[in-house]
Amino acid sequence: MAREYLKTAIRTATSDENDVRGIVQAILNEIETEREDAAVRFAAKFDKYDGNIILTREEIEAASQQVPETLKNDIRFAHDNVRRFAEAQKATIQDFETEIVPGLIAGQKAIPCQSAGCYIPGGRFSHIASAIMTVTTAKVAGCESIAACSPPRPGVGINPAITFTADLCGADRIVALGGVQGIAAMAFGLFDLPKADILVGPGNQFVAEAKRILFGRVGIDMFAGPTDSLIIADAAADPEIVAADLVGQAEHGYNSPVWLVSTNRALAELVLERVPALIEDLPVLNRDNARAAWRDYAEVIICDSRETAAAVADEYAPEHLTVQAEDLSWWIDNLHCYGSLFLGEETTVAFGDKASGTNHVLPTSRAARYTGGLSVHKYMKLVTWQRSTREATRSVAAATARISRLEGMEGHARTADVRLAKYFPGQQFDLVGTE
Image (cartoon, rainbow, N blue to C red; front, side, top):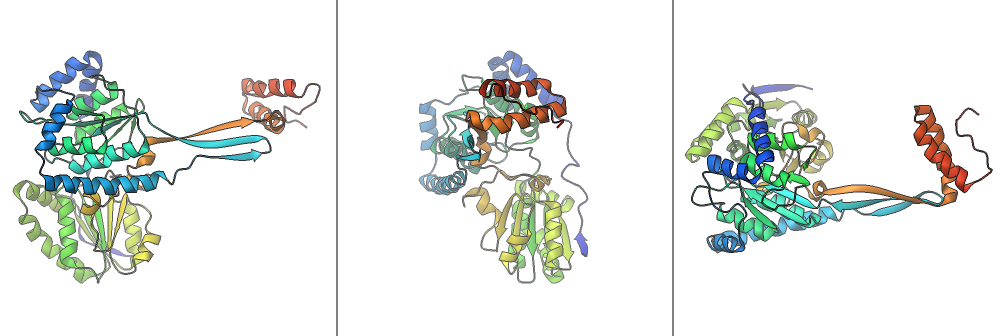
């Protein structure tokens, strides 16, 4: 299994991790103690915002009036696609019951979390699509209370398109708070919000650290790092499209890795030649992000076979995995570690990020080795139940007593003993396992 690096990364996605834990923990402690007063104080400090924290219906309607009708229609289109996909996902979860042994019935029941807190970034980029991805799936899952939280801008408040989108997708409360204070408000139940059972959505390193610290007290979608993307391309791929797709993902941030894995050297060299010009053609902020990401984090790898390319992709376990190669069926059967898979040049990561229906909240930093992305399943608890006839307890109770005593858990064993004594008086059972 041979691979050759035409370009190697000089940094990794964790090279620039700052020690933000202490800062975030201090803010969370202050807000938990002083509650709304502290949250308002941090909103004024970090967001330069002094308006309503919970948007009124009048404010939501006024914001919606500012959104062009064409954009509203695009948002509705994307919302419908995400909703339909989420509904199809939910249909794969079924309540059931089965008879384990005669008289012992056990079952599974899917119960949605009651309260969801959805964080929607609104700083450098206003992530309209994140409102669609997080709020829509919570609504389809059946959450009774959904809070959508997004950073306000000085003198403006939440981006009007985010407000319109969150309302369209089913948010019960729209919260004008950013960063740690927004996460804290949903987790601690400030401003008359129900305490969130689960917190979801992307955010900066402070938002990610707040979720990490609060995990356990609340559920979270996943631990998130910088976004990353990998493209597999063979000789049949279009180098212009491959290059454009790499640049499109590199603009996310200065530390967003993009990787090209190719079985064709000529293709890879053409992409290497084309990427810098595409980056320089971007707007200034996007260009700075993409330039740094490409310079410091990007890699280009030549593989001797498609089997090697698939193995490399599984090793990197990218958040986004694109295949621009022949025989797409082979790739879908042989790739195993990714957040979301995009097959063929007719689809691209941006489609999934914005409008095609699959969710864009996905595992980063190789977490795709063990988890998938946000879905209705993340908002739902698969719980089990059982009921039994007295006759069915005969074998189950006896086995339970013997296993418990072997483990040294006498109290457990006696909960089985007492039932056997009641239901089958005078009968002898081996409850120790010595016979």
